[in-house]
Amino acid sequence: MRKKERIKPFLKIIEKYWKKNPTLRFTQVCISLSIVPNTSGYWYYREDIEHFDYNHEFVREIFHWGSYGQKGKSKLKQISLKNMETDHIKSCLKTEKLEDNIKKYFKDELKYRRKNKCHK
Image (cartoon, rainbow, N blue to C red; front, side, top):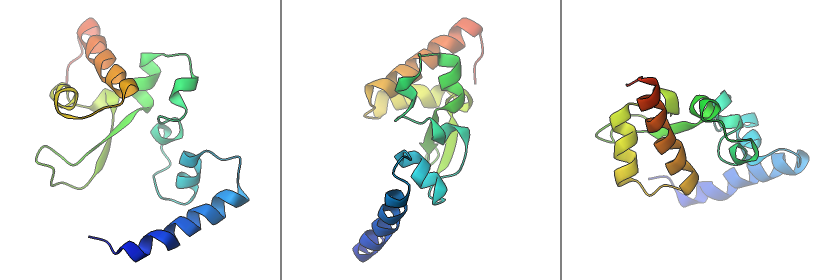
């Protein structure tokens, strides 16, 4: 477990950078500070995706889900929705407490796969 004393200095770095760049969204701040990788999924992730006309083909490309593997012991890996295993999506729907928009993405992905006969 990390020491609690590390939290404030870390947040100060974010705060200082964001005050110098107030027009950035939180995700952009995190990418600029190399807190999260600069991949397409992060630029539009959650805070922005609702502002687009909903298009599942777009969502499945840019939405990413973090996974620690089946047993939860692997290093965190970000997986695009289109690359998630079908069983993984079903498991998340059954076992995870998900926000409504994420439930929609997962359910729509399952429908998309049935309709297009693409299974992982």
